[in-house]
Amino acid sequence: MNNKSQLLLGAFFVVVLGILGYYTLFLTEFSLFREQHELVVHFPDADGLREGDGVLVAGMRRGRVATLTFDPAADLERRITVALKMDERVALREGFAIQIEDATLLGGKLVSIDPGPASGAGIPEDAQLFGSLEAGALAGLGD
Image 1 (tube, helix red, strand yellow):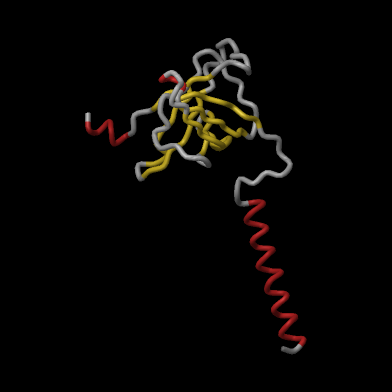
Image 2 (cartoon, rainbow, N blue to C red):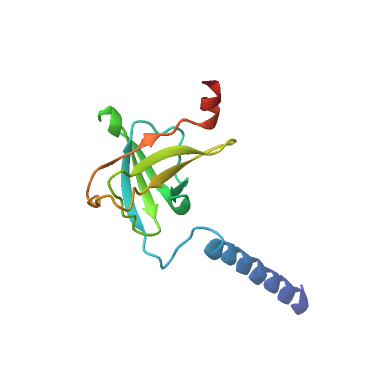
């Protein structure tokens, strides 16, 4: 192999690695320097939720599902513990709602957080949070 071929092959690999790095750092949810906040919520059922699914706060994507844990010995309303990695701290107020919902009609799940009305009193950060399951659109058609 001559020097010109080696130079072209090396340049090709540098370009491919540059494109891969760009997609990894800028077009995914990869965050190297951002501080992430954890929010732990208990649910009676996971309803198909998976690690990596999105978290919406007032309809805006603000995090992802980090872990799901099943405890068969726990009370019904706290059998599933979900840890959410949030991009920013979420100030919850009385009247808040956390639900597992369908992401689309074709499948997938997400966690939706309604932080509550602005006039509501704040919820302490160390409070235990409980969520509910949203009936899907297809389940509503069956009723």
